[in-house]
Structure formats: structure tokens, C-alpha cells
Length: 217
Image 1 (cartoon, rainbow, N blue to C red):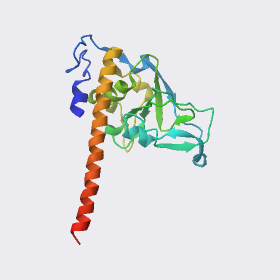
Image 2: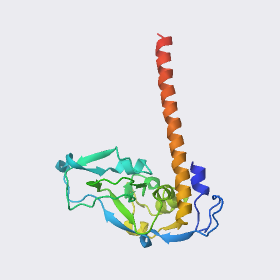
Image 3: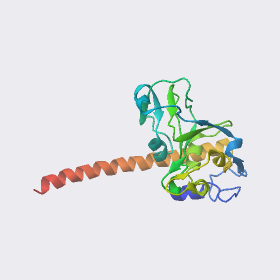
Image 4: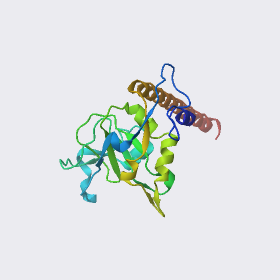
């Protein structure tokens, strides 16, 4: 998968990728994130006592860090607050700090259409104002070329932070919507296949443990 991420997205300001699907020949545009979307903040004005109860939910830092597509089943709860920004389908979340520069600026795309879901206070949100295929956006923002740009922006000593303003100045490859959909679909299917194999491997390991327990006393 990492190899595909490297060769299927343009690198070093090139205008065509190393490998692409047949019938696509157009040059890819480079657009700054700030030109094609707007940022919004996560939860604000909250105390420790505000968390752990309520009818609303929020996307956690770990959910964003660990998933190119946010997991809707892994949210924390909080009280409904109409002053907070609700997340929308297609929003992108960025982590703003980490213990190492290589882990800063991790991104995740939200693909649910649910009310009263917010973003945690340690991340910021990004909402495209032009049409992007959300799966393309999710995997492109985690490609080696974009990760390299984000890591370059990391600042700090014991803990590293990233500037929202600087992130918005990053140029991203923007092919046609149809090509985005093709690329996004390819990586989604690849992720689904990887997940299936992981599930099978986990089941086999459990079976192995059962036999080990029964065959050796």
C-alpha cells in the first residue's frame, strides 16, 4: 500500500503521477489547501467535568491519528452545545501536536452525516469548498509526499506542534473529479482487502492458541 501511495500521487511539484489509470491524461493542478477549503476549530471552553456524559459525541485525537477515515463507532460522549462547530460529511481533521515530528499533522476524513458530533480540542477541522472525492482526499493527505510537507512544518523540542496557517499553505495535487474517484475507490478496496486479511489472520491465531492449549499440558 505504501508503494502505491508513493507512485500514484504526484511528488515534488510534478504535474503527473508516476503511475495512473488508463484514459486519464490531464495534467494535475497544484492547489493550496487554503484556496480550496476553510478551517474550523474543535471543542472550546470545556472543563474535565463536561466530558463522559450527554447526548452529543466528539471525534477523539486517537481516532484521527489512527484512521485515514474516522471511525464513527469510536467516539466519546459530551453534552450538546450549540456554540460548538458540528462536523459534516467530507470534513477533514488534522492533529496539531505530537511527541515526534513524524507524527504531527495526521489527517482523517469524516464520512458520516450525523447531528451533534464535534471535534476534539487538540485538532482543527478543514472543510473543502470545491468538490473532492472524500476517499481521494483521505489517502492523498496520508501519501508520503504530503506527509513530508507536514513533517517539515513541525516545530518544538519536547513536543512538536504545527501551525494551522502553514498547513493551509501546503500545495495538494488536484486531478479531475473522475480520476479522484478512481484513485479513492482503488485505495478503499485495498484497505478493505487488508482489513479482511487481518481479520482472517486474527482468527487463525485464535485457533492456533486453542490447539496449543489442548495439545500441550
